[in-house]
Image (tube, rainbow, N blue to C red):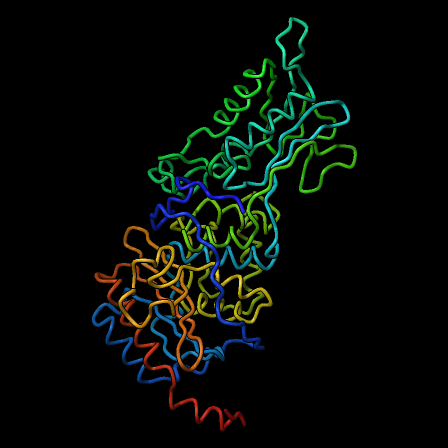
Length: 440
């Protein structure tokens, strides 16, 4: 696995300078069937009272849902009210990507040679595409179409670079002020260091062109670059101009750079809350870089998982859009469903860990939550969220909390998690088990 550049890993909505850390093995996945039993109402009165006491007079600002390992709601406060989720949105996009693409999937950046001799550079949004890798691509291109020695007869390397049209570089409803920061960098297919240095690179296509041009000229070659929209059908160089995920059988892959595998990309998105990665993963999983289409396909996938969809609205993959809406019932149910997924261990392993890793590294370290809560945080102005898997002595609990306007969100979140850990076995289950003929 390549080492992710520290600057690239500036946390999107939860800023951190840490690099992605090795995956830690989560508890074994327990395979279960069926849907979450949300319709029966909360079955743990003691936990429900504790949740209500934690939020106090600010209950209108909060949504909280806690499910047990059978998908039963142990506590629920406004769980069906759709709210702005901030980076908890990444739990949806990463689950979708893992399910669709698998744990070993890698994003590719390829140099192609077409039958007419034209070279073309295409990419899939590798968040860790580096200057050194682009220089290697340039050297291969030079060897195919130019000379390493200056000469009057040297023919320039003709290189087509396909990229997303400018109107797709940012989701339309991202706030303009966010777009200049590293966490709001433009989403493109060929993105050197995720289109971010200390701030966003506002014209990534021009930056890529400069790097390619400089690398070739340093070796005495010349380059003739043509930047085309990825979906363009008008092409002065390439006969078969529509390039999708599979290469035309007449074209040759001259060079390929690959990203880290999916399980590492998931960790970058969830542990470090990296916006660019989450956006790319959702688009690749949907097989569409049209954000509206990708959002629709993600929504349909989420519905197919048996997640309650009332009020749910998907507008991007990262959570930076304030047009997103999720309910805590939807998030907690997704967490529960992913625990049943054959790849569920990768999903849980991609999350931050209380007191140990990622955006939770400095939280809950002095409590019994240390090392026992795997979660995703979310932060926007006026929005705080946290959702994840809590280990208890009576099995996992799937917890989701969203605050849109709460005055002391971190204190409430800690109180609810500790209560969910402490009150982990509810007497009400005895009656349900007898009714269903279930025995311990």
